[in-house]
Image 1 (cartoon, helix red, strand yellow):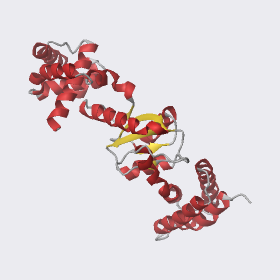
Image 2 (image 1 turned 90 degrees about the vertical axis):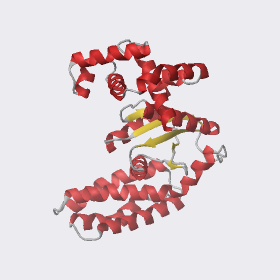
Image 3 (image 1 turned 60 degrees about the vertical axis):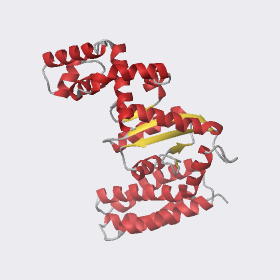
Image 4 (image 1 turned 30 degrees about the vertical axis):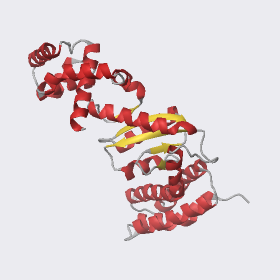
Length: 306
């Protein structure tokens, strides 16, 4: 007889929804207990993740309507639904987390997915990011802090953008995908992307190798790295000019936008950019030269931090 996920969730969660609607003390603790109990049962029954996610959404709609028919605190009910979903997915996927280390080590079991996307996380609390992903499906957490999504890279990118939109604020997600047997390479790529994004001062968001392809190619060659170090040395000694170049990079080369970000006059930025060209021989108003300057600054900062 098929396992009735919807019935299980209704039976386990109804009391929590009612307590939240009545603003009763202790409903948060009850939510944790009920969610972990349900998650353990679903895991033991080997319930597919998509079935669990679909049942969660359906149960939330039914239970919310049921408990609010007689009035109640709608905001608390919504919070209860969010907490229950996060805790259930945490309990349901808990046994999967050891799989992440095995896959990253090249020891993927037969039960592993065909491919994985590795996500390097920076800025947000790890548990908040993990819970956000778990509300969307399966996510594996490795001991190194990397997240593994058992999907191809395009689907992972869509999930990452959705998570970023939900969390808001300062969160950077660097994504790389590979077949299961080559996930270790994806981790290296995700770390490289994250390091470049951080050193270049890129804004919060989701990044893949194509977003830093130029910078990555330039840093692969020793001779190029040495030349970039030479070019950027006098520039790094002037933080004001560095901030000006980075603001122009973030503005996509648009000086008007960079002026607003820096709170300076247009003539001031023009003078600063002239100074940059005098110091480095590269013109920040030229898109390719600007990209080279950004890469050089990023490398110089990374070397200084190292």
